[in-house]
Image 1 (cartoon, rainbow, N blue to C red):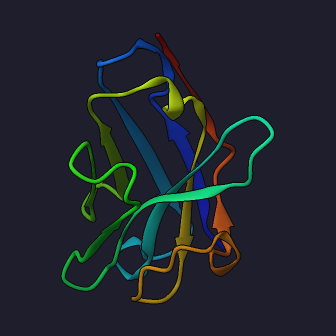
Image 2 (image 1 turned 45 degrees about the horizontal axis):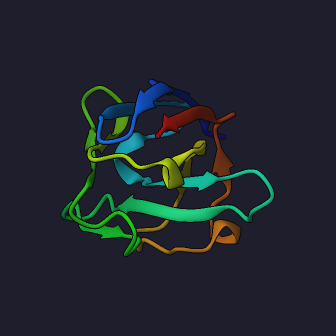
Length: 124
Protein backbone atom coordinates (compact mmCIF):
# COMPACT_ATOMS: atom_id res chain seq x y z
CA UNK A 1 0.00 0.00 0.00
CA UNK A 2 1.00 3.58 -0.67
CA UNK A 3 -0.27 6.61 1.18
CA UNK A 4 -0.10 10.03 -0.50
CA UNK A 5 -0.72 13.39 1.12
CA UNK A 6 -0.78 16.62 -0.87
CA UNK A 7 -0.16 20.11 0.42
CA UNK A 8 0.53 23.56 -0.92
CA UNK A 9 -2.74 24.49 -2.54
CA UNK A 10 -4.42 27.84 -2.04
CA UNK A 11 -5.64 31.02 -3.64
CA UNK A 12 -3.38 32.84 -6.07
CA UNK A 13 -3.84 35.64 -8.56
CA UNK A 14 -3.49 35.03 -12.27
CA UNK A 15 0.16 35.13 -13.24
CA UNK A 16 1.24 33.90 -9.83
CA UNK A 17 2.96 30.72 -8.70
CA UNK A 18 2.36 27.85 -6.32
CA UNK A 19 4.30 24.75 -5.41
CA UNK A 20 2.41 21.61 -4.54
CA UNK A 21 4.00 18.87 -2.49
CA UNK A 22 3.14 15.19 -2.22
CA UNK A 23 4.42 13.12 0.69
CA UNK A 24 4.50 9.36 0.09
CA UNK A 25 4.75 6.49 2.54
CA UNK A 26 4.20 2.76 2.68
CA UNK A 27 6.36 1.58 -0.20
CA UNK A 28 9.81 2.23 -1.58
CA UNK A 29 9.26 5.63 -3.13
CA UNK A 30 12.14 5.27 -5.56
CA UNK A 31 10.24 2.56 -7.46
CA UNK A 32 7.07 4.56 -7.92
CA UNK A 33 6.19 6.64 -10.95
CA UNK A 34 4.52 9.79 -9.67
CA UNK A 35 2.01 12.06 -11.35
CA UNK A 36 -0.24 15.03 -10.81
CA UNK A 37 -3.80 15.20 -12.05
CA UNK A 38 -6.42 17.89 -11.64
CA UNK A 39 -10.18 18.02 -11.68
CA UNK A 40 -12.19 21.18 -12.20
CA UNK A 41 -15.88 21.39 -11.24
CA UNK A 42 -18.02 19.53 -13.75
CA UNK A 43 -15.02 18.17 -15.64
CA UNK A 44 -13.19 14.89 -15.77
CA UNK A 45 -9.93 14.35 -13.97
CA UNK A 46 -7.06 15.20 -16.31
CA UNK A 47 -3.36 14.46 -16.41
CA UNK A 48 -1.06 17.38 -15.64
CA UNK A 49 2.45 15.96 -15.28
CA UNK A 50 4.30 12.76 -14.44
CA UNK A 51 7.80 11.65 -13.53
CA UNK A 52 9.20 8.16 -13.84
CA UNK A 53 11.38 6.54 -11.21
CA UNK A 54 13.79 5.54 -13.98
CA UNK A 55 16.01 8.37 -15.12
CA UNK A 56 13.54 10.99 -13.95
CA UNK A 57 11.77 11.01 -17.30
CA UNK A 58 8.95 13.56 -17.32
CA UNK A 59 5.73 14.08 -19.28
CA UNK A 60 3.47 17.14 -19.34
CA UNK A 61 0.04 18.00 -20.61
CA UNK A 62 0.29 20.45 -23.51
CA UNK A 63 -1.68 23.01 -21.54
CA UNK A 64 1.02 23.29 -18.86
CA UNK A 65 4.25 22.76 -20.80
CA UNK A 66 6.74 25.51 -20.13
CA UNK A 67 4.85 26.70 -17.02
CA UNK A 68 4.73 23.68 -14.70
CA UNK A 69 7.63 21.53 -13.51
CA UNK A 70 7.35 18.18 -11.80
CA UNK A 71 10.20 16.90 -9.66
CA UNK A 72 10.92 14.33 -6.99
CA UNK A 73 13.24 13.86 -4.05
CA UNK A 74 13.69 10.15 -3.41
CA UNK A 75 15.63 10.78 -0.19
CA UNK A 76 12.61 12.60 1.27
CA UNK A 77 9.87 10.50 -0.36
CA UNK A 78 8.45 13.67 -1.88
CA UNK A 79 7.11 14.75 -5.25
CA UNK A 80 6.52 18.36 -6.24
CA UNK A 81 4.67 20.38 -8.82
CA UNK A 82 5.96 23.90 -9.39
CA UNK A 83 3.26 25.93 -11.12
CA UNK A 84 4.15 29.26 -12.68
CA UNK A 85 2.15 31.73 -14.74
CA UNK A 86 -1.09 30.34 -13.40
CA UNK A 87 -4.33 31.30 -15.12
CA UNK A 88 -7.97 30.88 -14.03
CA UNK A 89 -8.23 27.68 -16.09
CA UNK A 90 -5.88 26.17 -13.55
CA UNK A 91 -8.54 26.32 -10.84
CA UNK A 92 -9.13 22.73 -9.77
CA UNK A 93 -8.48 20.13 -7.13
CA UNK A 94 -4.99 18.78 -7.74
CA UNK A 95 -4.28 15.15 -6.96
CA UNK A 96 -1.03 13.30 -6.48
CA UNK A 97 -1.01 9.78 -7.91
CA UNK A 98 1.40 6.86 -8.04
CA UNK A 99 1.86 3.66 -9.98
CA UNK A 100 4.27 0.77 -9.52
CA UNK A 101 5.64 0.85 -13.05
CA UNK A 102 8.37 2.86 -14.69
CA UNK A 103 6.31 4.34 -17.53
CA UNK A 104 4.44 7.61 -17.14
CA UNK A 105 0.89 7.15 -18.41
CA UNK A 106 -1.71 9.87 -18.77
CA UNK A 107 -4.88 8.01 -17.86
CA UNK A 108 -6.13 8.20 -14.30
CA UNK A 109 -7.20 4.56 -14.55
CA UNK A 110 -3.54 3.52 -14.72
CA UNK A 111 -2.74 4.88 -11.25
CA UNK A 112 -3.54 2.74 -8.24
CA UNK A 113 -2.74 5.19 -5.48
CA UNK A 114 -4.20 8.64 -4.89
CA UNK A 115 -4.02 11.42 -2.39
CA UNK A 116 -7.03 13.30 -1.08
CA UNK A 117 -6.39 16.35 -3.27
CA UNK A 118 -5.56 19.98 -2.62
CA UNK A 119 -7.58 22.92 -3.91
CA UNK A 120 -5.94 25.48 -6.17
CA UNK A 121 -7.93 28.59 -7.00
CA UNK A 122 -6.63 31.15 -9.49
CA UNK A 123 -8.39 34.50 -9.46
CA UNK A 124 -8.50 36.73 -12.51
